[in-house]
Length: 371
Length: 127
Image (cartoon, rainbow over all chains, first blue to last red; front, side):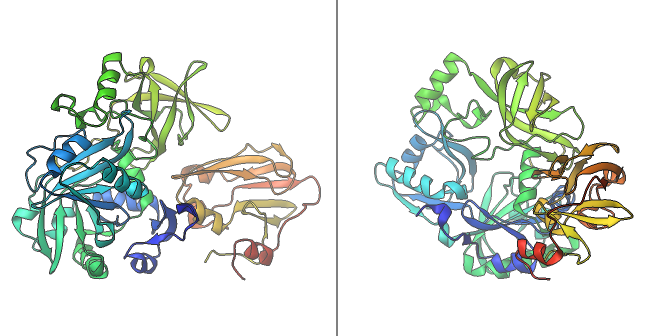
């Protein structure tokens, strides 16, 4: 029986979602809230105040042992060696072909590395990592023992003022600390997927209801409310964060996807390095670009064609109506010769053509995310 | 639970139709707007356009998805709800009222429309 035939899994917040009136959908085998009140309202809440997301469907994989650093340095293209405890790194994980197995966060804790991976890839990732493990390392799937909530928006810091130490409250971007939040042992991390300031908080699922209600209560004066996956998608696309399965997958490389800043080609051997070096030497044939619609009332959709004149030059990987910019925006792979900022493209979908233009990333530049 | 009005007729494509002085007023159901989510654009035909039953007469663009609109009756478009251009959210807010889409003067008897209880059945509800 394939994963698709199974009854979807539920996060420990499922009853809270139902109480909040969520519309629930099957996402990557999980029953998740796509929206509560509406995508536009929830999107706006995160851009102006603060929103609460259940992201417990994400997978957590721990890597421990004397050779953990050496192993991860070979497994991942990012800088792993000498990583400080309390640091977070965003990185792709590559195949020998240079294609992407998944994109993930690495948390360097005192006694292990915690890898936070996409829900849709959690099983595949765990098997891939275990199959590549060498030396004295242990790889464990810890997904069942971690719930995760994200609190995102310009008022995220205000929500936690007085509830965590000043040190935790003033964490720089991509740093985390471990603390007791309302007596619940938690990983408190200044990270997110919205372009706004915010925190991602990990704790044992048995405390789910307590934490959900506590965050909504202390956040109430700041206008907090639950936000679903629908707005999570529009928020991330406005700041050009890649979504695995849409913008990146096993057939795309980090270089093509514009993730070269995550890849340390000079650090020595790692899985995918030879392919990426070769790709770099030969020149990229295509690039992931950001484009906005010039034609009014046109919204690009995943899978639609991008053309220059009469010929197809690429394909849309993500597209939506931007609630903030109030126009159609999208990303897609385009042949390198047509990928310069300012290039005019034609979007072909549903039997119509519409004018688009390649623009600089990100679409939305006023996010409160710490640099 | 989606709202279903007993006095309307329905299609399997989740449109409703109401006879109004010889014309049929057409819109999408509460269930449809709920499934679509926040509507951002509605593309509608000009008045005067002739449509056959089942023809695509427009599209609804929501944030996450796009859906065609199908004519439940054959005839001529006599009126278009132009207010929707400035306020597409009326389709979400009031699908059976302010969110109406077009009026069609039928060229024959409308076929195969569902009554309210058949439509309720279709979406797994009871009246």
